[in-house]
Amino acid sequence: MPKLKTRKCVAKRLKQTGTGKYMHCRAGHRHILTKKSAKRKARLGKFKELKATEIRRVTSSLPYGLPS
Image 1 (cartoon, rainbow, N blue to C red):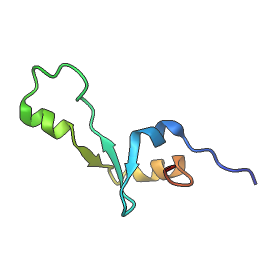
Image 2 (image 1 turned 120 degrees about the horizontal axis):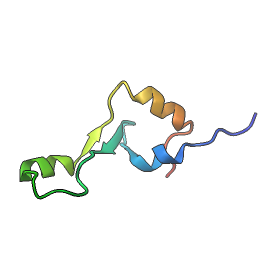
Image 3 (image 1 turned 60 degrees about the horizontal axis):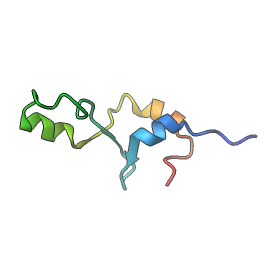
Image 4 (image 1 turned 90 degrees about the vertical axis):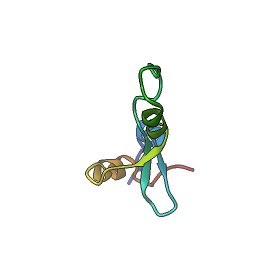
């Protein structure tokens, strides 16, 4: 049976923690930052845990986990 391919678009957008959870960057922190408050920009700059509903899709896209 051939090897399964990793979806690189998913692998580049996620990081995996030591406990196996997936973290992603929040959207909206690239440009048009002048109208956003400092509190909002600080929150957008942090990583967030992936939702439980998305994990099944991610694990099928990463058959061998995230490449290191």
